[in-house]
Length: 309
Image 1 (cartoon, rainbow, N blue to C red):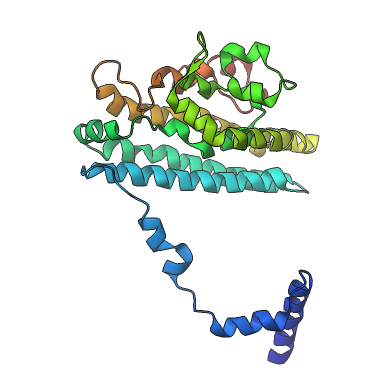
Image 2 (image 1 turned 90 degrees about the vertical axis):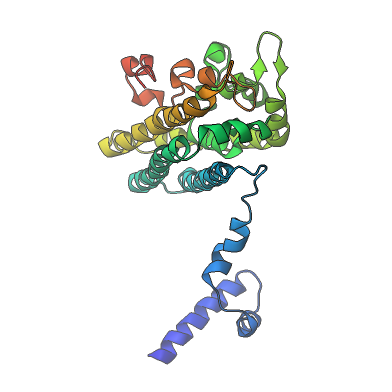
């Protein structure tokens, strides 16, 4: 039995390497010289723990850095799961619902994790080290923008003031210029951009345009509408879609806003965010009414979106 088992493995290895024009024996011989795997090598622990580099001597800055890096890792996991739904050839209701539940679970964790930010730093320390962060801002999380592009039709991400002038046929570069988050760094009366927005656009603009094109017909909402009609009426799937929508666009946002209120709101004067944005108006969901799946909500729910948060 052991001989047959080994033979079966060799046949499968031959199939694998022949498919890519490789010699199986060469790869097997390479195993003789390879090192055994360890946890720290596999996870790259040393490299990971070397990334928390403070700009000040204030201890709580480490909390701030590590927290945001952990958040970015969660964003990466969320994008990984979203892409599985968006690229699945034979998408089933079960697969969609299971992956969407994973995604929502990550956002649930991110929402509760704001307690670390809200209660895990001294306000006095934060108000000192935040001055060394100018003009950087959490606004500049490209992964979060990619999550939005992958979740819904881009029309739902347009600044509420301009949605009547933008539609699905609008060139994507024009649509990108009118995304709701542009309000954090643009004076729409003069057209002038802040450095916060200019640097962000220069760094990620081309990637955002590619993402908008990539997800135009394969974002979460589009994949939902491509399911059989019976699946689109599945109560569990609809509940999962609504939970994800509400969690991302209200619960998570309000958690972020409350943390900002404690720290930024404790500062003198207008208490601007580090990037100079009008963070209260930009962040609160009642101003922009960002909704990924508006067709799954009633008119009353849409009108009251974020009002009671």
